[in-house]
Length: 267
Image 1 (spheres, helix red, strand yellow):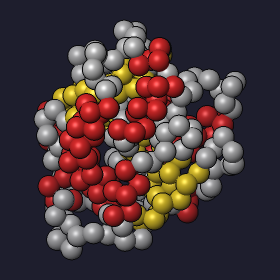
Image 2 (image 1 turned 180 degrees about the vertical axis):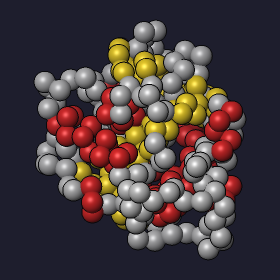
Image 3 (image 1 turned 90 degrees about the horizontal axis):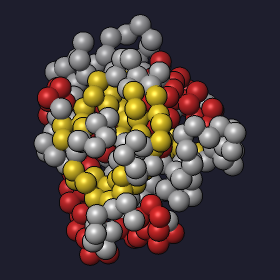
């Protein structure tokens, strides 16, 4: 069975009581505007910083968001808590709890479910960009209602080289094809960022001049970043709202239950 189409999710009213575990690997990549979008859709957010404290039990939450960070997904020696995060993500996929992995979070989800990550073969990908939806995204509950080429923000030096065996590729780009995928019924990985603000990316630019040099000329200028993030908000705010609605539909399912039906009654 396929998950609920996005057009149906988009018509459901605001939900409440969805408890979302937000895993923040780094102080340099907070939730940003994604916090407002998720809370506005009715989510209760629980912040966990695995470098400082153990992760809370997954059973207490209906969904997981895993953010980005400056560390490599493969640096278990320098950041041993990465193992714990991968374990949590694998558990969430097995339990069919919706997951949204962003940049590092996407790479951790890929590794946790059988994919492969490596240093980016064509160098760092940095700056505003477009990704293209794949045809299969037309039936996906989160991606169906996205424009064909949504605006995103790239800032990564590793790439998801091989998708997990059960993954469905949802969005690509010519340079790095594995830009977004779904694994299982409801776990999503975004190689790019949607949670940033213009101010946050400007701080990354100023703190990491070597990485910033990989961007196209002018792409990290303050004015350009402001315009891009306005465009991103139009696309990714509704996406975040659909994620919360999806989590509400999966809440309470037992391991042997089928996924929610394709057609849902309006709430």
